[in-house]
Amino acid sequence: MTDVVDRLANSLGKAPDVAACLDLMADCVETLGFGCVIYDFAPVSRSHLGTMLVPNVLLTRNAPESFVSLWRDEGYCRIDPVQQACLDSAIPFVWSHLGNARAIGDRPLTAEHQPVVSYLRDARLTCGATVPIHVSGGGLATVTAICVDPAPSFVEDARHHLGALSMLAHHTAAAIFTRLDPEAKRCRAVQLSQREIECLRWAAKGKTAQDIADILGRSLATVCLHLNNATRKLDAQNRAQAIAHAVHYRLFSSVH
Picture 1: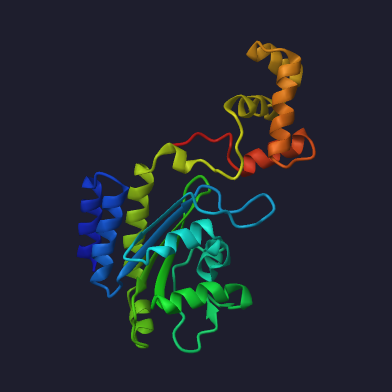
Picture 2 (picture 1 turned 90 degrees about the vertical axis):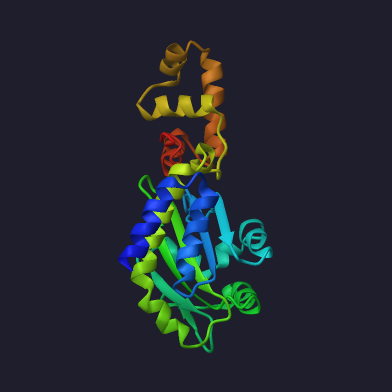
């Protein structure tokens, strides 16, 4: 299997864009018996309240047309037991909705998960392997390979291929990340203007509103307006909490 991983790594280096990277991954995992591939990326995976954030990027190969709209627009990602397991794990795992499976990644399935489980069963996407990839800077990517209409014995086959799949997934996710548009790497949970971020960044360095006004050549009233707007948008009670929330959402980080 090392030769497959090496071939993928070499091909990814020549891939012109994100779509080509995912196509190459799909071709590789097909040789392992997986017919569907799903990739997602969230620059920040949780809100400051701990709730899961919808990924900025969600791409599929050979998934039903309805998959992306359900997971991204209808909130299925938040009740997907696989996505929930990835939040707290860096270990690849096999999951199955075949037969009487009652857990995903050692987590029991509940009524909350039923819409997702029912959809995947109806779509015959009942056994897969998922690789959580915690990206440098705090982002979370996941790469999932799914067998369409698998035999019950495929669960063991998937476990056997998990190591190879993990290496393929890491190479693919790294290649995709370097090709993502900078906007896709910014957290969209809060929308601050560049001036609001700039003022808050100076406040995080210990500057007073008057200091910031002097630095930026703006009036004190204007700076206070930017800081107050930032505090409100970040759902913060005061400036110190606004700075903490801004750090959580990585608003001070450069996008690469």
